[in-house]
Amino acid sequence: MSIAENRQLAEIHHFIGGTVRRAGGQRQADVFNPATGEVAARVALGTAQDVADAVAAARAAFPAWADTPPLRRARILFKFKELL
Image (cartoon, rainbow, N blue to C red):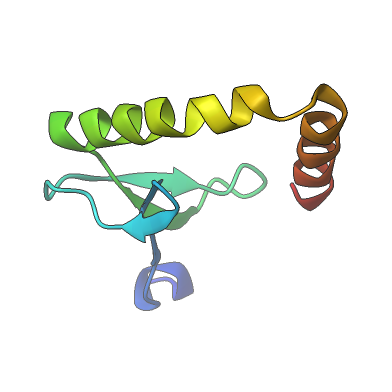
C-alpha cells in the first residue's frame, strides 16, 4: 500500500447558493494531481436535483450581478483570478 492509499482523501463538495453542501447522490469521482498523476481528492457527483438547485441559485443571483457596475464586476473577477 502506498502512502497515498494510506491517507484519507479530501472530499470536494458543491458550493450552491453561498453554502457548501454534499451532493444528493452517493457517486464520487477521483481528482488527480496533474504533476504526479496520483489521486489527490474525491469529488461528489451531483444529481439532477443538485443541478436544478445550482441553476435556481444562479438565476436568483443574476439580477443583483447584472445591476453591479462593470468596473466593480471586473474588480471582483480580477480578485478571484488572483486567488485562483
